[in-house]
Length: 123
Ligand code: HEC
Image (cartoon, rainbow, N blue to C red; front, side):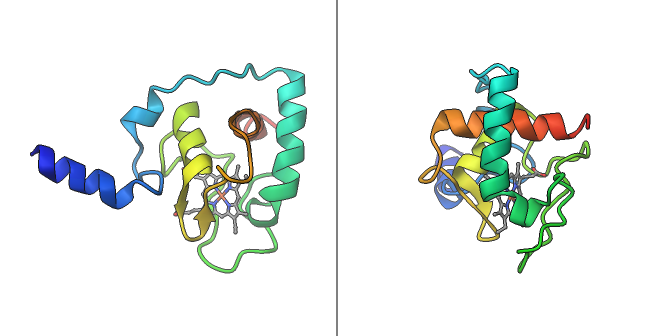
């Protein structure tokens, strides 16, 4: 049992897990969704994410070549709905269509983007 679990973990360690990730879900967002965080998250989003996820997060960006990006403003999350799981999806990536950003963004920048993506839903 332990061996099987370890093998699964090793296989998928470089990407977030489809269906959610209980370990990531336990990670608390250390950055309050205050206006400064949302503004910084918006800048990162426009620079790095908008080309695929679209200006409002609807998945209608212009640079999409592979899988259609999911709508980030609906209630459906393929990789888990908690802040910690969103962080993992952005930090580690989900697939070759959605690469990880850990080399390009600091943890704080990623949390700012998590806060910003959340705010898209209520707009
Ligand atoms: C090259 C296009 C592309 C870029 C750039 C990109 N994404 Fe994605 N993103 C995708 C695709 C495609 C998926 C769906 C991948 C899958 O199902 O494996 C995805 C999935 C996601 C998910 C998971 C959604 C869910 O339903 O669980 C999140 C969160 C996300 N992206 C956020 C971001 C953020 C934030 C950025 C910028 C830092 C970003 N993405 C940049 C294409 C992109």
